[in-house]
Image (tube, rainbow, N blue to C red; front, side, top):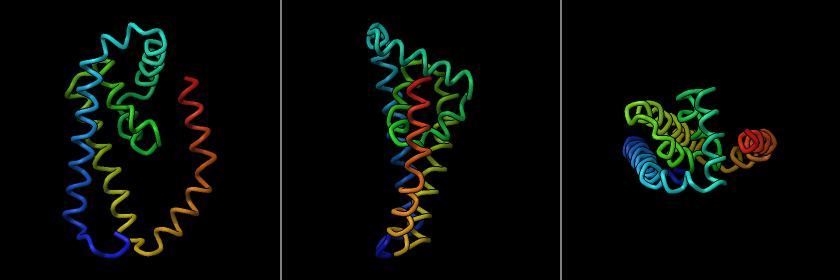
Length: 140
């Protein structure tokens, strides 16, 4: 987007569809392998932690999980392992896919050449809260 070579509409469409397809495949993999992995002590402990997190924050975990590095990669898989209902999962996960795609693509599009400077500045400032949130999530 920084060079202006991509159109906003098609880029948004591809970003949203890519996020939706990716999290759906991740959910399906978790659903298929969940019974096997839940027998492993390490995975079972992590799965119980994720269950408590979902019980506490509900579907919003799926929506805002997209914005937390590392969590966005595991949230679909974990949801599948927990055997969340497909309708429940899709409602929140797809909303998160749309919101995060819109945020990222529009930020790149509207910030233009300033995006590199802005991202470098934000990443330095956001490193502390993101690290703290990640540690908190791991410990829960």
